[in-house]
Length: 217
Image 1 (tube, rainbow, N blue to C red):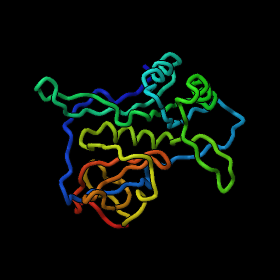
Image 2 (cartoon, rainbow, N blue to C red):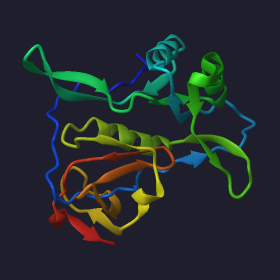
Image 3 (cartoon, helix red, strand yellow):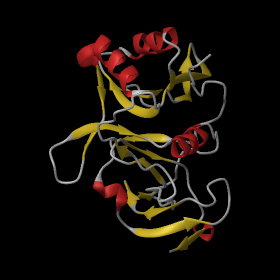
Image 4 (cartoon, one colour):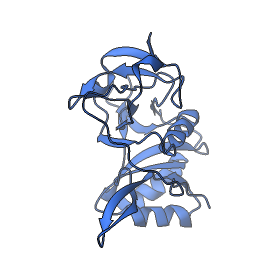
């Protein structure tokens, strides 16, 4: 199978207590995006984050499967009461976000098929008005996938990436599963959270990281 969905793990949500310290992560060693200049060669595959609107995620995934195009659709398990019983229910981490690993021409084929319901993320090149689809480098995409599949991470989608997620004291995680990550500390809704950002695309919050595991840089 070409598709990649992190649907085979199980975990209990990890609630964050009031006042817990958590790290804001705008990965210096992490999830930078790039803007592609127009290319002469179209045979190089890239990871393209795309918005999928109007509940078309299932149809888009079916098309990608049919065309043997690799994609990543992050999933999570949440606790819900069903028929009076507490069960784990699988749901998308972000319903409208799919990462597609394909060539520029492959992306265009899928985009043409779904017209207004599939929209790549775009970024400016310098100060010009030229726009091209944003891509996530392979190594950083692998790190993001690994993070999504850590049951201990307790990822929560916050929304699209914004400047506020890039402010605050810059720190490095020195121990634990997040060791080596660098980012920023900032308070949100009375808590201090670890934020993983895919630049220009999305921001995610993870669980609490003890202050003793952080160092300012």
